[in-house]
Length: 385
Image: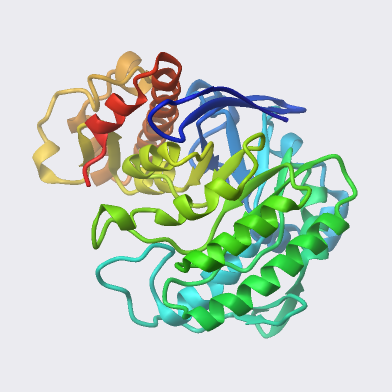
């Protein structure tokens, strides 16, 4: 499934390929998020023209959308999305966090200088056997066996084991308990699989080095086809040494001959740091979510097209970009600004297309730098810590 083609001499960065029944993914690679079997604003042909290699869809939300009855008749994500290229699905584990403690405690996956206060009702009830989600006035139960059944019906090339991500605000005791559940559920995920789909195990353990070590050793010893790193992470707040240090704790214990995925992380600096620490693929909603809100990504920084300073700016969005929005259509900042102000649907389309191309092309540039032996120099240009 995975081959390492070249290793960087100055870091853990590596060039490789992931082989799937629907094609090859060149790594390191960005994975575009299509939560509901759809990348918002863009068609499958748009995604191909934007150089997308791999899409990840959301198991929990597809389950809610289709139900068990609908899943039994579902033709599969590839047919539904008109996408005959590689696909991933998550396990529903992220919703254990996002609909649970992320709502109750506030904050996200990454430690920042200021954590949010509690915001909403916790919609999740976790047991050792699985998770109950509050949906309206009833509860729905999801465990490892059900998660894998759903993912088999969705038919992605790569599926993920069921796990429990924790909050950065959870203490050591809770993380240890959650890790025990995660390890049991991941073993159950392997036992539940009945197809030839490739399955990734997920390393958890929160912000605690011994738990991360324990998880990486345990998950790395199981018969998974690849590995993902999930849960909460440190940030650059507090110094360079805290930036994704969890990857330094886990990567040495994961088999070299299998791919490694970083869940839900994907800003420019994150990508460089993750690649340098041995990560092969990354998924993140940033290109489309921020694109819909007017944010354009360039190597010179993020540009907010809704700001008045672009009202009369006749320059193209990114003169260094080869995407059709910039290089072919030559869309100007002033034009895109006017579309956002008019709430024209084309604004989100143009911004999302550019952003997805930008991130895909950035990963291609990173791959080339590893191949040519100058990844370290490229990283120095784009990472400020």
